[in-house]
Amino acid sequence: MIDALYALTPRALTLLPPERAHELTLKLLELGIGLPATEADDARLAVNFAGLSIPNPIGIAAGFDKDARVPDAVLRLGCGFAEVGTVTPLPQPGNPRPRVFRLLDDRAVINRLGFNNGGHAQALARLRTRAQHGVVGVNIGANKDTQDRIADYVRGIDTFYDVASYFAINISSPNTPGLRDLQDPQMLGELIDRVMQARATHVDAGKPKRPIVVKLAPDILEQDLEPVVAVLVDRGIDGIAVSNTTLSRTGLTDLHARQSGGLSGRPLFHRATVMLARVYMATGGAVPLIGIGGIDSGARALSKIEAGATLTQLYTGLIYEGPQLIGRMKRELTAAVRGSGVQSIAELVGRRAAEWAAKPLDS
Image (tube, rainbow, N blue to C red):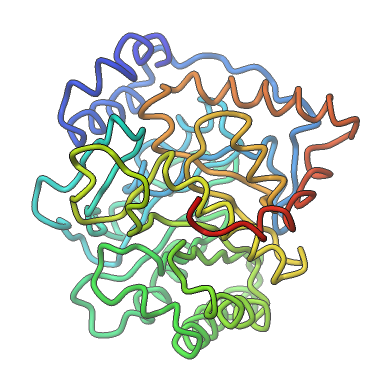
């Protein structure tokens, strides 16, 4: 696939409407056109995340493969792990088009997709047919019109328990009305309790304990962050992902900056990394974190790791840099480990967290 995508991305694909370009990319991955034989990862990039052994800390964020069409192709591109979704119990079309906007001047994207996906049954059928190798997480959400959002997350745990390496609980998308209300400490506590109970039922039946990760927004008020993190720590959550897209528009110059929806890409990097570091400090480094937002180079991935991330995820960076970004990032991270005089990238996790946490959210 790489050769074909090199010819199309990033410049040529940006000539197509964003959703059409995305669909073309997925179809190429499904066909396996030109997929390279990736080199073995340097052993120094291997990490352990909540008991999962992962060959390198780079993954593609949820939203890229909503319906579990290409998780194995993502792994063959060189990612250490893949995450599919966000997937909801029932299929839903999402918000009206146009709903994705490239901000070329800002190296960013605004989307208001609204959890468009084919539902649990479609994704489950695909995941059941794949060879069970590599780490593939399932990002679960709630339907827009559901009467019980928490029940939708429980259904996600039950539906995908046998095919997911881990679960990501998405309560931070800004494009489903009321979804971020689940970040309120009281509602969050109820959600985590019910999700954990669902997992316990499977574990009691003799199944492996699947890690559960909660994905937070970068727009949580500073005074609310510690209570939110305290709920997650008290409930024994296995990981925290920081962060989803932002509603902030600080510093944007592109004409599309006034579009509603969640902002991703380079302008999100600073805010998301500060939030990541603050979560790391609030947990005392006791909960492994996934750093997301604005990663488009090995240097930016390294900053996330030094701010407290064990794993990193990217998506918008691929739009602007192309799939060759993954291999380049791994080479840059390997060089950073070598230059730091340590034996593993895991030794760099959190070493600049205090420095990042002290910065203002908006640079």
